[in-house]
Length: 59
Length: 502
Image 1 (cartoon, each protein chain N blue to C red):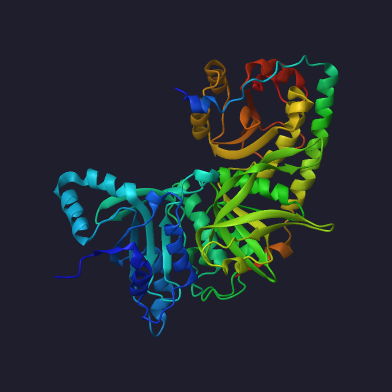
Image 2: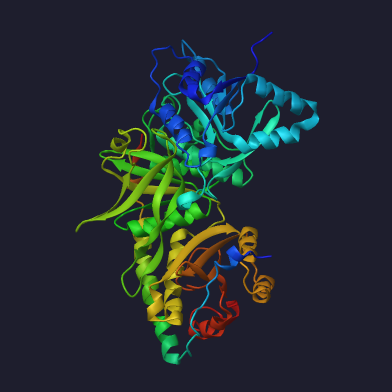
């Protein structure tokens, strides 16, 4: 049985959700594509480990 | 009659005890690591957990030291003793007679009571090698408690120690002081991390020498021993592979926020991070065992596409120059041409601590991953970006800035146990569990609104992120407010299949 403490971790008092329109759905899909592309650029930067990096020596 | 195998001393004599155990003379000056251990144990903010008594076990056969001995010291002209000593630390107060009474009680059939009582005050052990310059061998100490938002779980592991057959259990991450004869800072940093992940997958933890050997097996740049030359990043990756894990290597490269996201995800997943710090022209390796959650958020991206996650106010790292769980802070610094992640060791007990991290920056991180964990922390960030607009739109502009997202990888059973404990809508959760096939490890993106759990996005970890099917890894989206399920389905119609929403 869940304790009061664990129950309090869940979201409460959210406003009622608004009606979803087709325009909003399309905007979300488009925005998601742009956002993913932006994140992938950052991911590529941190994952770009080169041969020179592999020669970094810790003593 | 022989000297008893366990001798009791008061903690006040800690440094003297170490000196005697390592065979040093009276002119010996305790290395920084010994002073740190004394200070770490004495300054626990929980006064009841401060040390009072030492149980000294001599001789102690330590597998890790013995391997170093047989491969290096045994062939030197003046070899040290092959046996070590082990110092057990207790927060309860007892003397030799009190210890012997407990032993008699255990031997007389009341082992469980003695075990329970000793376990309550057990703080861990320190192996002392008979090497006066580098005496601190394999050391397993309890962490401080969870006060102040400290988080060591799930990085620290369940450990046990036996003193004359009395088994004591506690959680810790092993630490060892570097001995340049047989290992570099990189070897011991990797050793601490591998000790955790190996045990978590049912393997025996390797020794520091085995790590050095694995690192230099296929990539020869110097002598294996002595190992004073250190190890290259590529050699660390090689060693991770040799032990059956997949090395995931990332660098800060002007993106400290994304780097911190991967660090936090893997710490939350129980993978101790090995960080390579650039200090001037040199590099130094440390192992991160935990962190303290900050009150602010770290932001990746710019408005309106901002991924927020909780900051790391401190990290607790095993630094073989200092000791286990040493406090450090990571701060993102930015100038026009670069962005860095500076490491600062605050002055705690030794004012010269600050000099150890002067002008040092985190440069690389390497994580030993379970090989079938193919979805990476960075992939989770990409998925979080791909789902960000859905949650922002669902909650509206006014609440969007209060949304944060945390990521982790965990065994599906552990995830479900946690999920059941949250007290959500049992009917919908049961439906999700009945209709979702989970991979052994799941990727979890947990969305919060003002710190309260809004939704869980559960991901398959057995494949990489593919842009051709960006939401292919999403196994289930559980919204904790049932009123939002239908709107979410409609809003995400072009992204995630409807039947994944619960």
